[in-house]
Image (cartoon, rainbow, N blue to C red; front, side, top):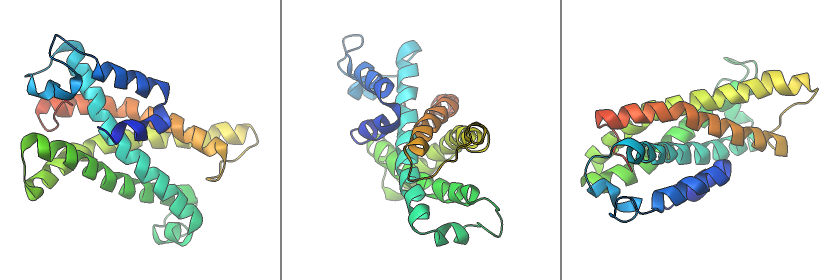
Length: 203
């Protein structure tokens, strides 16, 4: 979680800082949340908090992946062409979302691997497979919320204001912060489900 917290604070700001404080607060005399996965199954508020932390692992991968992908497509438009702009998609944003997903998925699996493999004592192969299973549905749920928010802003809100969104603008990254928060909201129930099934471990 050491990398996850500052990365997610890029979009979550104060509420991620609040969640960090809650996660590090002693609960039931067992010390900080960092050691809770060793204390047995969680219930109630402790379980909800562990799912929140699991969701942030997905969020960290999405955040880094989307930042890199957005600037890559902005700097090298040919990347968008390679992923369907002008052939499959009339608007570059849809090709960019494909690139976003690929980068976000790759980073998400990496974050999940380094969380799950040490916790379960898995070697590389089984650890990678566990990370893929843990991140796939979680990331899809996240991207649905993120893309939905971006689409509303891109195709409805900003045109109604007579404005447009560009990667090199403050407005774009403000909307991206809102979109990431929406992604967190849509991914949280999926993470709850995955933890209940034992596919993911509560953090």
